[in-house]
Each structure stands twice: as C-alpha cells, then as structure tokens.
Image 1 (cartoon, rainbow, N blue to C red):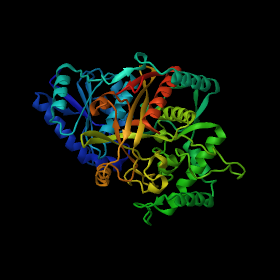
Image 2 (image 1 turned 135 degrees about the vertical axis):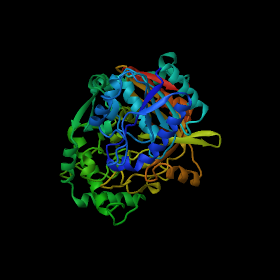
Image 3 (image 1 turned 180 degrees about the vertical axis):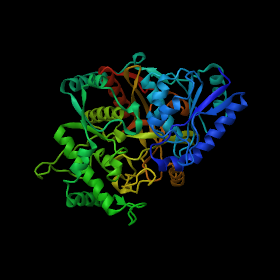
Image 4 (image 1 turned 90 degrees about the vertical axis):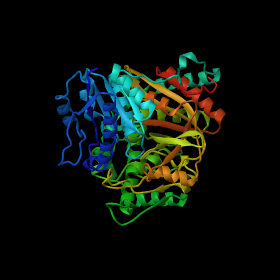
Length: 532
C-alpha cells in the first residue's frame, strides 16, 4: 500500500455534541496517528479542524461529500471514531471509495466511539462496501498493533468468527421447528403493520429494511409522520397525562424533578412525554400497527421532550391504560405495543417477532434493544454494558416499577429535556439477537446469555463511565468473546429478552430461529448452541 494514509472522522449533527466530544476525539486521533507512524506510514487528515465551529468532525452529509471530493479515490482510508456519529455523513463517499478502508474505535463508554463504529460497520455491510475494522483501549496493545500492521501491509484484515454457526448446520428440536413454522405461516397469511414515525434516524442507513425484503416476512410499513404525532399530542388533555403519571407513581416509579427547564426534569416535560405516549397508542390503534418506532432525534427533538418515557412504557405489559379519544374503549388492553427506539426497523421486526413467540410460549414478552455500549471484565467474566436512552421496560429492572426512576436526559443531546426510564436489569437468562441486511438479504444473529448482578458500587462506576440517566444491563454472552461480538455484530443495537429459566430460553431461541428461517431470513447461531 502507499506509505500515506488519510484519516477522517464522522461526527454528530448537533453542534453541542461535537464541541463537547472533540477533546476525546482529538486524543484518540493522536494515539492512532502515533501507532501508524511507528509502523513507517504517514497520516494526513482529510479535513481540517474548524476553529469557528470548535471541532474537526464531518458534521453533515453535504460536508462529507465535499471532503471526499478532495480525497484520492484509491488512498488507504482510516475512519477513526471516539464518539457517536451519523453514518450518512460519510456513507456516500465510502460507497465509491476504491482504496482500502479501516474503521477504528476507542474502547470507552464515554461518548462512545465503539457504538458509532458498529453503526457505521452495519451501514457499510448493508451498502456492500468492503472494509476492515479494529478497536482498542490504548492503541498500543498487540491485538491492535498486529491488526493495524497487517492492514497497512495488505489493505485487508479479518477476525476470528468461529463462534458463528449457520443454522443450516444445526438441528432444531422437532417441537420447536413445528411451532416456529406454524407461526411463520400465520404471520405471512395474516400480515402485520409496522408503524414508522419518519425513517432513518441519525443517518442510520443500516436501520432501514428495504420494503421488498420486509414484505417477504409478512410485515408492511405504515409510514407515519412525527408532525402527525406532535399534532395528536395537542389533542391529549393535561388530565389524561396526569392520570398516567399518578398510575406510575402508585406503582412505585419515581420522577427526579426540578425547576430549571434547561438542566432538570420538570413537571411540564413529564406531561408532554405522557401526552406523546397516549397519542402514539391512539395512532397505532387507528392504523392497525402491531409495532411502532419514533425517530425523535431529527425534527421532533426541536418541538417536544424526549420520546424515551413513552418508549419504555410501550414495551411493558403492565402500563398506564390508554383509551380511545371518546373514552369508550381501552386500546391494546393487556398487551405491550412493541416500540423500536430510534426507529430501528431491524429491531422493530425482531422485537415484534420476539413478542409473538414469547406470548405463544407463555413467557413474559417484554423485550428491548440496547446499545452495545462498552464492557470490562469482572471477576473473570467479560461483562458488557448494554445501555440505551429509551425503550427499556420496567419489567426488566430489579424491583420493576419500584426500581425505576425517570431522570432528565442530557442537555447535550436533548435540549427540550424529558425523562428516561432508568433501572438496573435484573439477573436472569436472556436471548439476544440482531436482524440486519447483508448482501441484499435479511439475516439474523441469535445467541444466549445471562444478566448478572454486580455490586452497587460497580454498577454506579459503570453508569458514571457511560450515561448515568439511562437504563443499564450487565450482560454476559455465552460462548462469544468481546472481540468476536465486535467483529461480527452489524449494528450499534442488540435485542434482548428474558427467559424464565435456562431451558425455557433455549426453547424460545429454537422457536424463534425456526420462525425466522421459515420467513426466509438467514439465521446464524452465535456462541454455544444450547441444544440445537
């Protein structure tokens, strides 16, 4: 390869986030540059630090196209991320770049780069772009340096994926196979509607399922508008929202409130959030939606507090009742309405199917996506920090509603405020998964794991190293190492659901695998096979 490589950095769309996160990005770029130069190569930054903006990120798709016009199309390219980033800022340029591409992330929960890189990797995979990927805490460890040296010498880098086994090489138990096949036949016959409140949150190209692939599963999109949701919120009375809050507080949920709109959760913000919850349920009922996703980040964030409170409640079976506007009919009574955070349609399909399977088997069906946020070893096990701004249901938390708080979302991302649904996930057996698009096909990775209880001081430490206002899950994945998940996973998000016992979780995984295979989705089992 040429002895010069070009470095670029995709950033956020929001100026405040880019400015706050820039020092961390600058530090990581310096470490990566130092490692590259020690191996005899030179690094040239593909775009400058802009003093007037107080950061050096590519902060829009428009600017990304301008940057790529000045990058030689065959140049070796490093995409270095220490932050959450909007993948569409650089996707256009990367789709036509002819030189080798290496995505790199720091191993930190702070902003976080590894989440941004996993999203970009998922976008590149869906777009059919060849790339390699690396991650490191220090950028001086053998794993990183050896991988970097190989990529610099050859333009290619691969990782150990022995943990991933195609379902075609395994045998599903007969009873699970029959249940899954029957459920898939019913879904394709009866069909279902996925309500999408504006598509493509934060440039997440990987989170959009092409209609022609989705339709084969029996699920069809109803394209809804966040402006319609906002309009419907204006038709919900204050008394309805306050009734919902009272219901939550009687269950033990605690709202951490203050008076400063800019930095604290206020009573007015909570009212708006619960109006969104009620309005979303009514719109879902009107259009016959079996699952919905609210984009929030673009557009709606400038009008109203965060959607996260609504999302977590929707994913809970036990939630404040919502009635039709005339008060005559309870909507989705004794049901959750699966919600996919950040309108991630891959999570939406997964969450909806999971809900159907767990209900069929008689298991608690509450499920959610999380960010693959970060992790460290604890007492000899690698324990992931799964963390998300919204969608996590109180049923997942220690103490249920009594273990749930709502805290003001970080002003850097959520200028209008609003509260989260925060709790620490209870110990238990889980099934994890991710639906994604690769080579024009719909695929799913499935695996098993457990949630562990950590000492309170360790939980607090991990919260402080990430985002303490958000719900947390301490997850251990069976038979999948840290680096194997990073190498194989094609998204920033991961879907999780509890099984009542290990045997029940194994049974549910088998049914879910059979159902997805019958829907035409390519299934891979990651880690231990658990009876398959």
